[in-house]
Image (tube, rainbow, N blue to C red; front, side, top):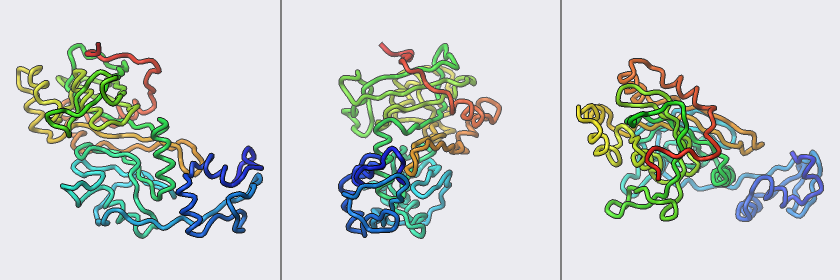
Length: 333
C-alpha cells in the first residue's frame, strides 16, 4: 500500500527508495511477470497515488544447496524470514570440507513446500549456538543485508568466560580493535590496532560471577570472523571451551587446574546468540526474537553457579543498551 508521503512519485522511485529494490531485482521481477497497481499491469514509470496497492510476482530462485531433512527449532516466522535456533556443531553454510548437514540445507528442506529459498543474513561459527536470521527470498535478503550493514540488526550473545581479576559486574566494557588473519594459522584471527586490521567493536556486560567463571552479555557493532572469541581472549575474558583462543591463557591464570576441568567437561566455546532484532521487510517495524539458551550451556552454568538462571539473566540484559561512548576494557591501551 502506497503511503501518503510517497504519493505522486514514480513507481520505480518508490520500489528502490522505500523498499530498497536493486536494479537487478527490478529486472528479475519484470521478467517474472512485472508489477501491478490495483490489479492492473503497469510500467515502472507510472505515478502512484496514496492508497494504491502495488503487487508483483516473486521471481523463481534456484536453491543453492541440496535440501536435507534435518529437524529445526524455529523461533519465529513470517512471509519474509525465519529465525532458527542453530545447535552447536552445525555449519551455517556448507564448506568445501563439509558439504552436508548445514543449517542452509535444513532450511532449504523446511522451505521447499512453503515457496521459499533460504538466504542466511548472517552466520554463526560452527560451535556457536543460537539465533540465525534467514531470508526466504532474494528481496528480503537484499533488504536485511542492507539493514545489517547500516547497523539496524541487533545481535545479542551470552558467554561463559574466565573471570578477570577484579571482575566488575553491571558495567559495560567496549572493545575497539582491529582483527587480522593469524599469519601462522590464517583461519584464526589476531587482535591488532584498529588501523592495522578490520575494525571490530564489541560491547561486553559482565552480569554475574560464580567461582572462576562469569556470565557475560555481548552486543556486536561489527560482525568480523571470530570477533567475540578473539577480542574476549585478548582483553582478559576468554570463553570457556574455546581452545583456539583460550586454553593457554586460562591455564596460566588457574594454578589449581579448574580451567582444565571445564575445558574437558565442555567441548565447545561457551557462546550462544540469544536475541535478534531487525526491521521487518514488510513495514520496517522492529521485530525482536529470543532463542532459548542451549542445554549444554545451561548445564555448565548450573554446575558452576548452583542454579539454573541463565535465561533470567538473558531476559534482564536483553533491553539494556550499551553506552554511546566507549568504555574501554581492562587490557586496552
